Amino acid sequence: MKHALTPQRYLILLAVMLTASVGDTLLSHGMTQVGPVTLAHLGLLLAAIRNPWVITGIFCLLGFFASYLTALSWADLTFVLPSTAFGYIVVAFLARFWLHEPITPYRWAGILLIVCGVGFVANGPSLTEHAPEQPATGGSE
Amino acid sequence: MIVASHIHVGPIETWATILTVAATAVAGDVLTAGAMRRIGDLDRIRAKSGLGGAVRAVTSSPMFLLGVLSMALSFFSLLFTLSNVAVSLAAPASASLTFLGNAFAAKIFLKENVDRRRWLAAIFVCAGVFLLTK
Image 1 (spheres, each protein chain N blue to C red):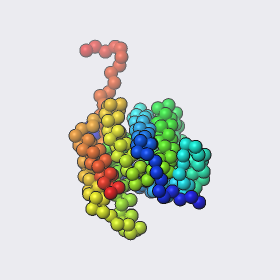
Image 2: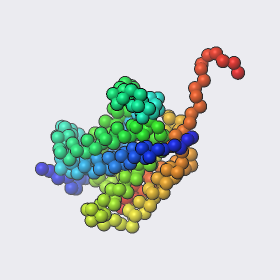
Image 3: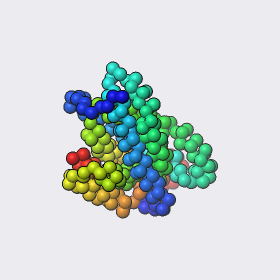
Image 4: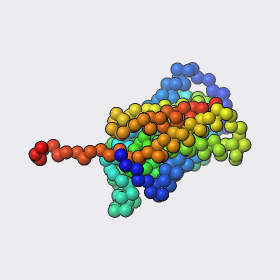
């Protein structure tokens, strides 16, 4: 396994983290405005994608997807996902200091656990080195 | 405008929708990660063939397209779930299950070296996300 992340690659991971958090928050806000979608009223899902909050959320998630694919092209899935979980902490801090929402001791404990989890992978190798595939025919042992 | 404040669905429906979100998300993640591994470093492809070349390389991969289909299913499942289940349960529960499911799937299907450090990371993040709902 190797670990060679350039500053530019850390920026890509940062983009994955921020666009996912903001996009999910916008989608959630939009869906509370659209109302409950049931199996009998699946057409509401189409109405949902006309909601401005949902549309903005979708654009954020498109940015997330582009940066996420880029990250997956040079790092393992099991490296990228925990690394970008730091976004949950960003949302918690935004909620605390911008929206003035209270953060319970449980939430602080959750933040601490996520920081530990991110630390485990951030200090480790980012990519599993697989042995090159051997040609099916030819070559002597 | 309707505002969804208190929605009541049974526990089986709740967890079935959450599991659907997680399962389709894991399938999408593993398929796209496998496709990106086959395609190679996008930074290098972009440097060599430009942005258009990178986009063509990605969108011409059937495995990637299957992954996107799974992600689209996960997205609509998430919208469906968010409209029926409280976001404070649905979002962290599906995210936590997706973290653990991805660790298993990456080890089995992508042959990633999920060592003790990565298992601990997945478990810590999973538990941490769940505590954020409290």
